[in-house]
Image (cartoon, rainbow, N blue to C red):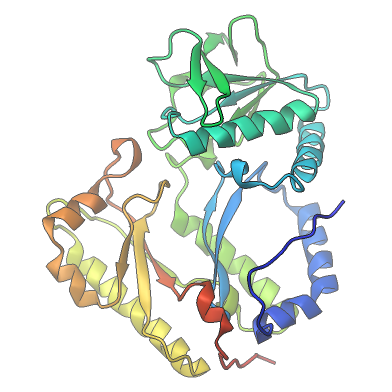
Amino acid sequence: MVPHLITALTGPINELEQRILESMPAIERWFRLEWMEHTPPFYSSVDLRNAGFKLAPVDTNLFPGGFNNLTKEMLPLAVQAAMAAIEKICPEAKNLLLIPENHTRNSFYLSNVATLIRIFTQAGLNVRLGSLDPTVDQPTELRLADGSSLTVEPLVRTRGRLGLKDFDPCTILLNNDLSAGVPDVLQGLHEQYLLPPLHAGWAVRRKTRHFKSYEDVAKRFAKLLGMDPWLINPMFAPCSGLDFSEGQGLEALQTQVDAMLGKVRRKYKEYGINEKPFVIVKPDAGTYGMGIMTVRDAKELAELGRRTRNKMSVIKDGQSVSEVIVQEAWPPTSASMRPWPSRWST
């Protein structure tokens, strides 16, 4: 079953998209061979940005929170994918413990959790919710916008296993990105499957390391298609030793931003792109769209106001920001309707 997807773009297909469509057989074979050699994440979501002349990921979330956006046509495919993934990891799985974010009052996020429960329930599993929030000391009902409700329960740790009262799962699925660190209750679970693994959380993972790995993959993929890897890969640079609240390290950040804008400017000149370059500065770890800043001129960093510095200094769960990624940005999808010139490598 393949759903019929409708796109809002009705204009001519640009050259980049045309090359990808023409190369579909080679691309599918490439992915099939890659999956044979590497274990993909259990689940993930990728933020793609399309400007017509460039289509690339700008973020990858290993604890995705947008399952409520799936259409009815996509749900059967999601159930099928869940069944295949669980079968591969734990064929005898019956009980699944789902651990959501601690701040679960957001109605959209709760709808995401409800959809996840629906997917894995239809995949044949008994699903219950457990919370890492220490204030949840008894079963707690959370109301959804549609009038339905979810029940989240306190976790129960028994030696090497984690579960709920009268509920012993063989698989634990984290939908909590561990921004505040790895709690003790999740350590040393040698008798159960924990998905994703703890090192996938923001307490350990860094975006710069992720994009360095992606850069290597993009180069191999671009070679397959005979194209410039820049067309599918965002340029980036790390910057550390920052303290936005005190204004420390901003000169080093300014240098990195200026260098990145220069690289993008040269690429635009190479492809005849008539746009003013800009970059995104964001924490090297973390999500929820916090601590993000758009910079079009490095001089802007020397004039940051107190409000902006405060916004950049602290992210989710009160974590301070000392490391950022300076990432190339490009115009949004609406620009893809313009007749961008392009030059493919041979």
